[in-house]
Amino acid sequence: MLASTLMLIALLCAGMLIPAPYSEMSPGPTVNTLGEHQGEPVLQISGRRTYPTDGHLNMTTVRVTGVDFRMNLVEAVYGWLSRDSKVVPHDTLYPKGTTEEQSSQQNAEEFSQSQESAKVAALKQLNVPVKSWVIVSTVVKDSPAQGRLHAGDVIKAVDGAEVKQPSDVAKLVTKHKPGQKVVFTVVPAKEQAAAEKAHKTATTTQDVTITTAASDDSGPKRAIVGISAGTDHTFPFSIDIKLADVGGPSAGLMFALGIYDKLTPGSLTGGKFVAGTGTIDDSGTVGPIGGVDMKTLGARGQGAQYFLTPADNCAEAAADKPSGLTLVKVKTIKDALGALKDIRSGDTAALPLCGAKG
Image 1 (tube, rainbow, N blue to C red):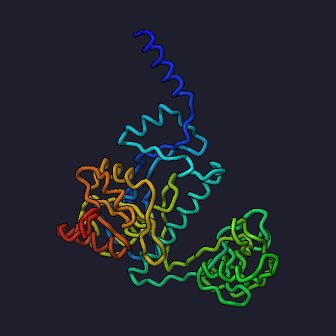
Image 2 (image 1 turned 90 degrees about the vertical axis):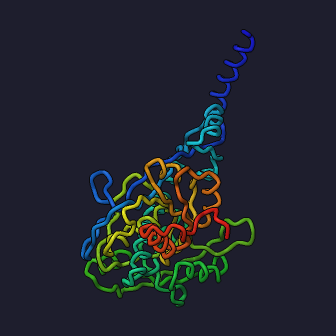
């Protein structure tokens, strides 16, 4: 018995010392987009009439261990056995070589973009016109574009061909071979910002010639300049989203629904507690997210009755659904608005449920 006890102690000590290449996910806070967070309204709209709201439209989050956290074997086993957490390979959350700073920056950028897309998707549902244009989103360090193009520059054309959406930029650049020159016609970021402040349309453009470089692809090399293109917008009134210590793109759907609710008379939820998740693009398409099982668990723990679930996450969410939570499948913001109509009217038999046949 003494030998067995000593062996067990030795195994436990070894387990606590042996690092495991895993990270842990657990349910994070949920925040009502119709309410307040840290004493401030989450959604602040001015310059347009708003209406009273009730009920909940909660965005959900997942807590994850940091980039530099190294789980030991005992912690990994405990996480595997616990229903309130999920152990996943470290590289799933943080690709090899990612630093804490890079991860935080990416999460912040994705969160900012999700807010912009949420505003656009909500206003499009209300037939409110939104002006948009293609911009330089980021410039890669030590790339050909560094010092030539800047984040926020508006891309009007590439080699004289009009740019209408971000994907046009890569298509036009990759028509070249590495080492060839490409000409960007841009409105400098400062000029654009000044025009927006004066509520005018920027007209000053300049041509910027950049020599392309070869991509790092393992296959055939593509011509690149070292930027990523995105979209910026001008809204006809002010919409601010105040939510600290949150990152990533997964709150887009719930932000869009919260904005829609505040800009329309009547209650979108009928007083019900609805939570959800999902990325959203400018057209209102809802995309999948990570950690959906942790989000449903967190939502139910806060009292949610219904959970708006991206269609591509339905199978995973239904496989471990918390008791008392109805998982509603959505592909677009229009689907979500239709589901909310059924929820507030009590016609829940019509809801498209995750896991339902057909």
